[in-house]
Amino acid sequence: MFKIRTYNAISPLGLARFPAEHYRVGPDVADPDAILLRSHKLHGEPLPATVLAVARAGAGVNNIPVEACTERGIVVFNTPGANANAVKELVAAALFLSARDIFGGMSYVQSLGHLRDAAELSRLVEKEKKRFAGSELAGKTLGVVGLGAIGSLVANLALDLGMEVLGYDPAISVEAAWRLSSRVRKMDSLTALLAQSDYVTLHVPATAATRHLINRETLAQIKPGAKLLNFAREEVVDVEALIEALDNGRLGGYVSDFPRPELIGRRNVLLMPHIGASTREAEENCAVMAAEQLIDFLENGNIRNSVNFPPTAMARAGGHRLTFSNANVPKVLSNVLALLSASNNNVIDLVNKSRDAIAYNIVDVEERPSEETLARIRATEGVIRVRLL
Image 1 (tube, rainbow, N blue to C red):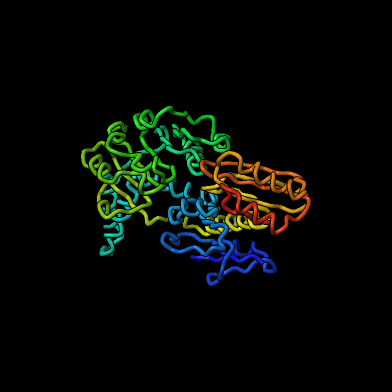
Image 2 (image 1 turned 90 degrees about the vertical axis):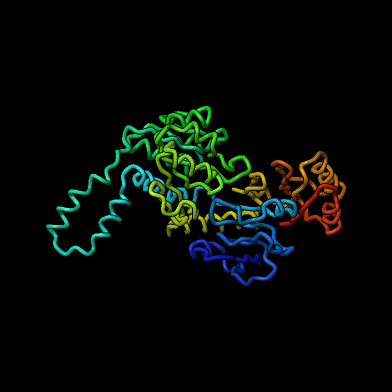
């Protein structure tokens, strides 16, 4: 029986993926094998020694102490792409809102509630509508920074709207490249993209490398009057530099899903309450994806969509399955295999993968390793965590 502790309101569709006869799932589960959450912050919260994995039903993992988990051999999963369509649709709305003063026009109409004469109302709005004129998106240039699951969808959508699309992502994956239309012009640098774009939309993760990616230096290169959209993470934009660029007219407007006190009430800023993934469909997709990844890991040792462990999977070849994580240094795998050989246990199949300072191994053996052999493997220098499935 595997035990899953949940935080937040996880979609019932995702929870239903756990077979009741093999899993106990809920917020009060003691000594859990895994944790399933959305936005609950685990920083500073002691994780039980039994925890093997943490799954985030969403893309961002800034609410999870990833480094500390890695040191303990805890696999951290996320669900990239599961909420991509929801964010793409909100970015599309943001593009229209930034091109046409839709919000200003609707707010103006709402202010006329005191009028009771329909003819007078009609005359007034016809007279004042020029205040809310905008421009069309067709023929304009959109720069997409980050061409992952969301960025590639936004880029392809913009092409369908008749826009020219520039893309910049030095770390684009093969999978993302396949999703991207060949009509997207790949740019060699961020500054080249900024200089040519009428609209710029950000779709990069929050990392040390992307913190304040948009700053005084980069904003100095942006096309005068361009509109900036941030549906990535708050930390990607330097707010002080942003305000300066808005004040001096270098930047024509800013639309973001991450409100800041300094930006509220500004005429050229539109702020949303972090609703990018707030659709029923996105929450269901994320929960189902997170649950399925946990099940495959707990039952088979396979890893898909981890932010701290390498992607590792192997079909069952019979026998017994052993998995272990270790420091990514020489001889650890060979020392473990030597211990299996010394116990006359034949290896049927194995896979070894590494990522930065961590390595992960799946080994299928003919006989169930004895407790003595398992103890010796756990005591091997460099080994972090051992599981017998």
